[in-house]
Length: 259
Image (cartoon, rainbow, N blue to C red; front, side, top):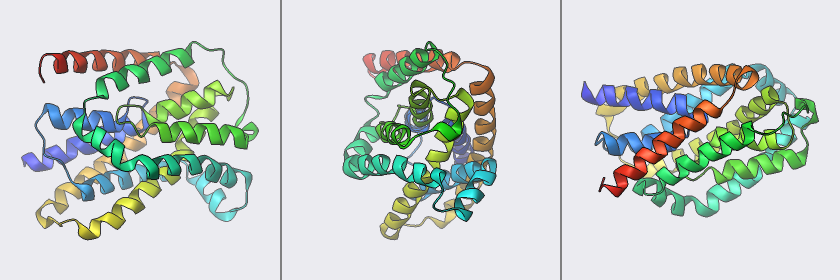
């Protein structure tokens, strides 16, 4: 039962924090260390990503259907252009940043940096450019920022939304593009991780907890996307900035005290 509860908990954490600007990887690293959880393994990590992928597909199905039916459309090309720097950074620095993620030694500072980015971008003048105005240069910059979010406690959604806002894109459309550009990134991570699974041991006793955790990740991800779209349209991300600042400060204090 404890194992099942752990997988449910990690699934909910993954789903919520993947799309809220507070870093999913940073939270997973933190909770695993804080509660003494064992590493969940590559298979469950892949399944969690698959759960969040399904959440994006459900919310943005009209746009995804359009991409499939119109593979040469501008939107398709924008996602391809944005994915190139993300993939390049991920492939070139994967091993290095995986080691940083496992150690968790930098996550306090990274949470503080995420908060600073969110607060700064919310203090800027709001842009008026609409979704159809997004350029290939915009996509390249946002995709590069998405790649930079390979650091464990730098929020992918926070950094890409911030990048879009800094380019003068309307808030709601900035969030939409941030979530759409996450699709190839999450799908690519699933494919790469699946390729590595051939050499990984399969623990059949954990399949049901993993499946339940994946479902929880998908459901939580769906809620988080809907919530984030509402917040970015009508509210402010400064509350998330304060949250990650407090979290980062607590982590640094705990590390200073020997945690």
